[in-house]
Length: 617
Ligand code: AMP
View: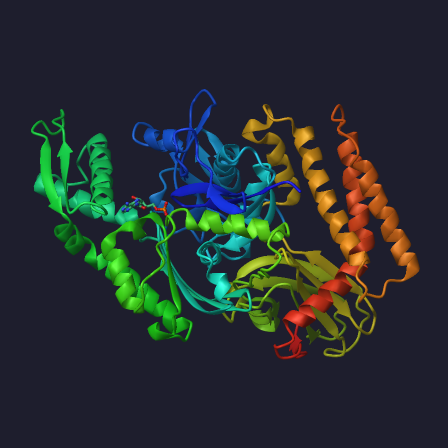
């Protein structure tokens, strides 16, 4: 089985890790750098710089250099009101029909979706990892389905098969080996470059549940740099509003360096050489004590957010069993000290704090490929899922923090006489009204025979598979009419658009697309075949001989179509794809039975499925 790379796609930096000789290891470039700054710079000649080189260009060419793409993933223009000022490029939204919107960033006269931009970063990270095909990518625990889907799509555009999207704090907890304790409450304090997150996780028999998340999307190491910079500017008698941009950038770099130095040394000296804008130059010694006093309000602000997260999780400090630190800024001794005092226990700092998430993602990849049989790891639904009912209220079918795979059915009825069709609007969020939740998609159930209001019986079923993909179906019981959709968020890209972007992606010309597709399909086929064979050999399942024969035939079809490396035309790939689709189709009833069994086991300690009545709008 091919190897799986774990990727931390960060707001400030991204990185990859892989299991080497049984241990997760961060992949570095030839100069020993693991972190790829999440920055892209577009040149007028069409070339694209990513990472450190792009970051360096932000000074000379800010309009063509983009930062913080992660803030835009899966968001609408409306969602972005508060962060739009942080991004120098113009952002607009195009209407893609049927109510679906696509967000675009204009750089150098060209529009790019956030998915395409993130794909450029992912491709660089992937290149560093030796161009693996399969990946686990991490996202913040508070990311909703649209943001997760956008991340999946970015992976796909970058040529990756995204095996799983997992929560960053879960990955960090895995990296610290906290799953070994089987049971407990864990706080993950993540202070990065641009954002702060505090997540309270519950661990029970290898299942991580997010109890609560708190944070501040505008609090990070950059703010500490800005504080130091303001101190220096003040002493120089300058105002950031009228200072020269190059001088400002130099001061920002010096401030960051001083901050980093003070994590190890008791004092450091900032030296700004004389320049045209500031002919005297500036030399200033800063002690750790002065620095700590300066940044104390920011650290206290982060602890306030932890307090809220604890309250939301209905836990007190003393109920926290482990504290894990993540993010480059947690190297600051003051932060380590105050976080330790706050939770009343020494936080885990054994790992490099900017590597923990990627290392955990690599471990998750290893678990998914079956190399760590001991560990059962399940994730949870981050935000509740439901449908819109009469009057715009939300009826939740799957509640947040439900372990996946999960399934829920509720019975609804019609609101008016002779209603022959109902529209099922799928939403995600914790609020009671649909207008405050995120719209994930809609479909129509037609062909209901005319009958008086409230006579129809529409059973709506939500099914989330182990990969977090949601399928919603509706069946009118009296007529047997049925409709179903696999949910792709209303905000974001369709499969066709992703496919087109894969083809149009920057390195398409260099990569041989057909070869890559064949490799991907072979990997997918091999996984499906081995999975199917394992299921067929289970003695606890009853499988009808005809069904078994049909499935065995389809397995043979995939195995046969995989025996080729012919990439002169697309035919071999198409044939294998068709064989895989056929196998997926014929195994669907069996897979559903297995899934029901698993869901039943997982949910056995939960209250039985509830069937309630509501009115469909
Ligand atoms: P991350 O987003 O996790 O990559 O964290 C990046 C942030 O960590 C940036 O603001 C860095 O300046 C900061 N950082 C990295 N190393 C250190 C250090 N040794 N001391 C203080 N801050 C650091």
